Length: 365
Image (cartoon, rainbow, N blue to C red):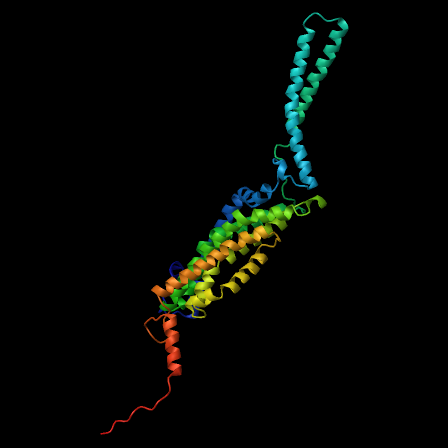
C-alpha cells in the first residue's frame, strides 16, 4: 500500500505483479475517495438541486411584467402570485370597513331599520375579511415552477445522478493524482518535463470551463430554449432531461477549455510550431465556432458568442505561452542533450539537405 502513496521512479524495475498491486492500491484509494465524496454530496443533495435548478428559476419572470413569458403555465403561476398579493391587501381593507360601519351604527342617530342594515353589513364584511385572510394564508408562498418527475423512482434516481456528478467533480484532484502517479513513471525525465505541466493544466482548465458554462452560458441557453414559441406549448421541464442537458452542457464547455493543452502538446511534440498555428488561426477559429455550436445546442447567436469568446482568448493566450516556453526552453533534438529552437533546427536540416556530397580531399605524403 506504500507504493500507492508516492509515484514510482522511472528507473525502478517492477514485475507484472508489482504493477497490478500498485494499480489495485490506487483504484482502492480512488474508490474510497469517490464514495466519501458521494456520501457528502448526497447528504447535501437539497443544496445541489437548488444550485443545478437555479438557471431554470432565473428564467421564470414572475415578478417582472416587462419580461413576462407567454407560456400558459407560467401565466397561471403569475396570476396565482398576484391573486395572493391582492387577497392579502383586501382582507384588512374589509376589516377596516366593517369597523367604520360599526362606529356609524353606534352613533345613535339612525333608525332601527338602518341599524339592522348596518349590523348585517358589518357582520358580512367581518366574515368576508376572515375568509379572505384565510385564503391569502392558504395560497402557496413559493410560486416558482419546479422540475417535473414522471415516475415513482425518478425523484430518487435524479437526486442520485446529481450527487454522483458532483462527487466526481469534488474527487477529481485525488482521482487525477492517482492516475498521474501510475502513468508518469513510464515517461523518461525529459518526457515528464513536457507531460506533467500539461496534465496539471487539464483539471484547472476543466473546472474553469465548468464554472464559466454554469455562471455565464447555461442560464442564457435555458432561457432561450424555454421561451422559444412558448405561446404554443404548455412547457413542462422534466427533471431527468434537464439534469442530463445541464451536465452535458457544462461538461462540453469544460472540455472546450482544453484548447491550451492541445496547443502546447502539438508544439512541444514538434507536430506544429507556434508560428504555423498562428499563421492558420482562421481555420482554428472556424473549428472553435463549430465546437461551440455543438457544445451549446441552441441557435441563439448570443449564447454561441459567449461560448466562443473565452475559447478564442484561450487560443491566443496559448500561442503566446507556447512561444514564451519555446524561447526559454526550446524543444530538444533527438539524440542530442542540448536544446535548439525550432527555426534553427529546421534551417540546419535544410542546409544539410542542400549540401552536395563531395569527396573528401586526399592527403599526399
